Length: 217
Image (cartoon, rainbow, N blue to C red; front, top):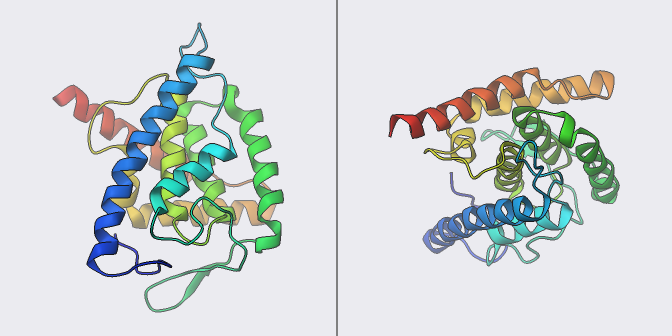
């Protein structure tokens, strides 16, 4: 799905740049995986002992929105909301003033969970948290998916084979994806912890689909 809400450009050229940026982001994901596995591989599990930090998240966003946003890779300084095509608002993220504090706290939770969570759980949690904070003016979805996929690869210990990838399959199953996000949000609002049951099931199914395609090849 192409975006029509960019700062710097619109129309067909914007769409072409989105596709080029997506290719750059995929290359960046592989570079991050190779870098972290080289420096932080766990000898017993072959997975990375450390997760990507906020600088990596910002770089994934910068790469995805380069030449599209005026401030790629920079946390937003104003309000945003998510709405359906008919204008119905479905989610209002925290205010811009709260973004950095939420990101610091939630990345602390990633650190706590990193080695104690299976890849699917880590992917589900990071996918939810970036969407929940919505730290950027635009491009949050593509950045959340990229960070989620990077974390799954790092916890698995290799760049995953098969196509389409989880990165692509999430967007191809957007209705189920959005439903799982709302389930997680409802849990967080009720208890202070996201209900990731639906998101875990969703990511697990997509991961099996990607890996099964590699076996089929």
